[in-house]
Image (cartoon, rainbow, N blue to C red):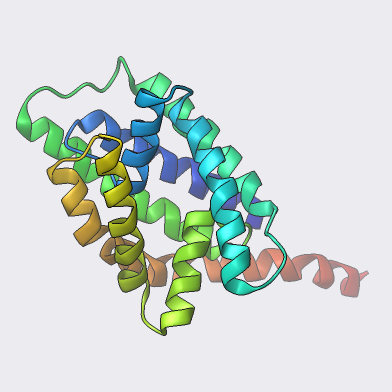
Length: 211
């Protein structure tokens, strides 16, 4: 059951990313970096997700002084495929032109990203390297997710600006609210998923005892 929520969380997360990209109001600094690389260098947005993930896995390994979390690459691969899949599906379906429809599209994306991220993070199985970095910085600085997430967003914002990624008012909102939204959803996903994950992990043992 844990792996089901893991995949569902990533698919939800990537759907949210695609909504923010389609809103044309600006994406998160990390996604703006991916789009900027895609436009200026080539390859798809999802491909750059995987490439950057490899770099971040090495960075996380250095900060934690432990072996690289290769499973994080699996998450990055699924995320990359998910982003490209949703962008392909939404390209002709969702192309908001009026300002209020763009705001609605972006707002939906922000909420869906927070929910999806909180869901798959709670399964504690192979976080996306950038999210693992968020948790590492939170641990090293002894602060909360809001602070560490905002710090990382600002770093990627500078790189996205250099590459002329899709920076806009949405990017600023993501920097200010992204960590806050994730921090809001974390306790709710814990409350909902803990009983389900606990039951699924203990049920095989219970079945064996009853035989």
